[in-house]
Amino acid sequence: MASRKLALVFLLLCIMVVILSPWADAPSPSTPIVPVPSGEDLATAKPVVAEEISRLTVEVAMEEPEFQALVDQNDEFIAKHPDISVELHRIDPQHAYSTYKQAAQMEELADVILLSNEWVKEFAVSGYLLPADAAFVGKALTEQFDVLIAPLKWNGSYLWGVPRDMDPYVLVWNMDLLHGWLGEDVTLPLTIEQWTALTAKSSELQGAFSWLTIDRNDPLAMLAWLENAVGERSDGLWTDGSKPWEGTPFEQALTLLDQQRAGVKFIDNASEAASTLKAGTTLAAIVPYSLAAPLVAEPRISSDSKLELDHQTWKLPYVWPRGSSFSISSTTEDEDAAYKWIAEMTDAPNQLHNLEERNLLPVYRTLYDNDRRLSNLLPGRNGQTFPNQSPLIMGPDMAARLEKLGGLWRKFTTGVITLDDWKKEWID
Image (cartoon, rainbow, N blue to C red; front, side):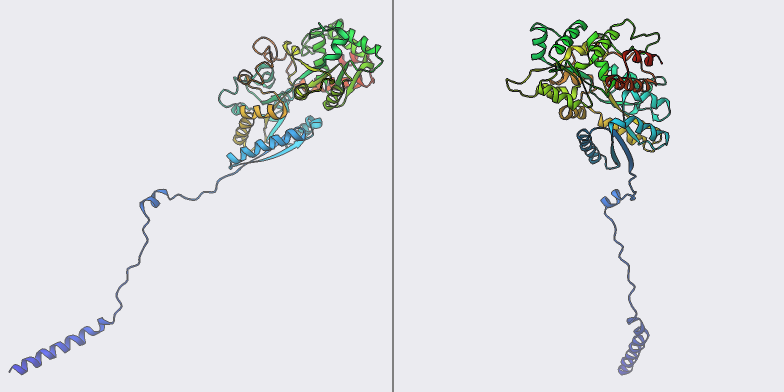
């Protein structure tokens, strides 16, 4: 009986083995392993978006050394603003006006251009520019001198340029000759009678020394001498009803220049004036401040002529500042980038750098109060004198007027026209 039970149990076990054996070889189900990002990864994950680059073209009328200084400043800007690409181009200063005008008429003007202040309003009225107000950052607008900012205004209170620098003409004297010809007690500025006495002395020396050296290609050089000789502002020559060459001090000064032209050295560029002053062969020269400053500061041996810059002229009510400003083309597609670039190129550090490297005068008032090199430079800056006076004439035709005056001046200095011809052509 017991053996039967054992046999039954054994049989049941065999049956169970047969039934369960197919499952023993079946593959076990696998669970895929999915990597789970950490909480930090989840928080910082962002979609990748290509950064848009603003592309600017900038054209400036500069000589090569000044242009290279701007290139360095632009490199610093690009390093700080990788989202803005700037392509700089230098054009010949002698042909800047015609170059800009032609490009504007063909709608090929660069995004940003550097203009003489007297040109800005004409370009704005012609529709070639955008207002530049947004480029004045912080207190930049309140820092500007009236002589620089007034010509840039048009169509209400809009500004069409941002001043970068100024480089007015100054008179540099050979003090040894001046004292020898007019005495040790002579003071500056001279009267027209003293100028007449100097021309007579120059004639006596039969051309050994010129009594004046002046640029024949820039009418502003002529206006600078007229202002110095007569002690009056010359920006009113074009005012309504003005007859500047009939019985006026300006006529007297121009007549002196005409009659004593044999003793004048007419030059084609300012560097010639520097050479003449160093050689001691001219009594006085009208030169830009950027050239005069290093010239008078240059160490000299005892036998060299003593050169002195006449700051008294800058006490006149008006002096042509020969300022330049950045303006924005109306065809630009990167207006905001242009504002940003101009704001940084005209900020205080860059203005001081331009002063240090190129002797170009800053356009911010406070720099003249806070910088030792500038604190005594403009003695009349807090009064009703240069550079706090706006020009009397600042319409859109100022560029054309100066261009006509430049043509007259060149013909006058080369003897093509007489003083009477000058008066007739001025009226015409």
